Length: 305
Ligand code: CP
Ligand code: NVA
Figure 1: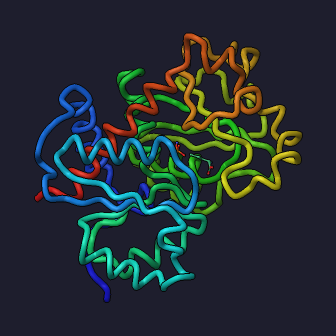
Figure 2: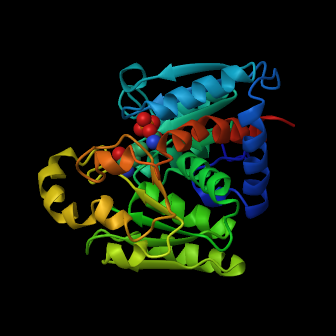
Figure 3: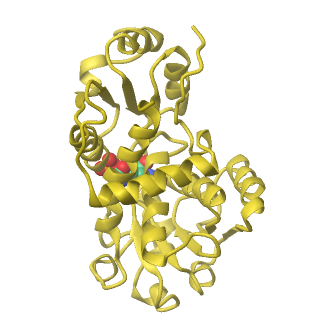
């Protein structure tokens, strides 16, 4: 059952022009949140891992547009165990109008989307977090007035959140430097893709093992947890490896005009200090609020004629 339904599994499932439309609508929706434009739409939210922001932002977003949401926790579906991924995709396609999936293995999303005839949105996988990246570029745009010519330092693990930021930067002209310990670099494929796409807009993508170097002249400094969901057994080892990559006042002194970003949840005292996350440069709660506006704009883009 192949079909041409638009899915957003990666940031690159959207073009630069489409992201531009979504960002403009998100900024409008931040001021004017309510309408009935998605009345009759039903959004299923499938979670294999915990969530606060993704759940709240999608549920409130669709309901503020007159639609409904359904939460499907792992115990409810047991996808791939109680029944095949393709059967869940086929069933939901006949009964709701869109679905978001938070999965451990990106291939679960790919397989689900292959058999779905409704739009499927990646709500975080091991490879990407595109909804986060939409809110992130929206946040930089609102706080720094533009994306082209600006530079963001991502400090930490070069995995899902970092990958989507690289790709969103490439599509919007935002340069991204990644400062990470050796062995925790972003995937070569994603970096190559970001460089290829970003070259059209003059955006540059650099990987360094020196966070202070990356912080100089940064317009935004962004961090994420050292051990992602599913990596809990590596927590102790990672604390030691990532300690030199903590976002603290000493590092931030290199970038007095940078905004401080974090996708949340934050592990205070690990990847970011209280002083920095609660300090005057932090925009983390505006960034988290922007998830709702950006995803609402994404839902409107995918579901409205
Ligand atoms: N940033 C983010 O996706 O938050 P949740 O894990 O709480 O959804
Ligand atoms: N990298 C983190 C992001 C959480 C929103 C994780 O995968 O747990």
